[in-house]
Every structure is written in structure tokens, then in C-alpha cells.
Length: 91
Image (cartoon, rainbow, N blue to C red; front, side):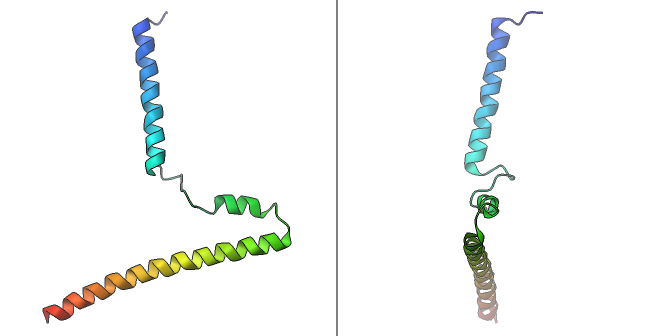
């Protein structure tokens, strides 16, 4: 069974459309499994480093994690503070 030229062009255009959609989805961050800024690269390199470099990388990773937790908790505090202020104004 032979594919006609029109069918071949349609198949190629569909493949191109799927490829372009995946590129745009990756760039916009729509793909859940792919996260930018994760520690995956650092963790992979951790096992190849000597002891001092491992300790330094662990320190940096811990500092980044603490900073993210602090930023997240300060965001929650601001939300709670604004709702408290609104309640006080109503009274």
C-alpha cells in the first residue's frame, strides 16, 4: 500500500505540530515532570566530588532550602496579616 504525497505531507505537518507544541509547553513550564532550578544536577554531581566538595554542596543546598522555606512562610504571614487587618476594620 503506497502513501500518496498529500497523506505524507499531512503526516509530516502533524508531527511538526506535535513537536512545536512540546517545545512551547516545555518553554512555558506546562510539563509537570520537568522543573527548572531543581537540585537534580547538584545531587547527581554530589557523588562524584571529594569529601570537602560534598560538604560544601550540602551546605549550599541546605541554605537554599532554608531560604525557600523562609520565603514561603513569610508569604503566608503576609496573607494572614492582611486578613486580620480586614477583620479589624470591619469591627
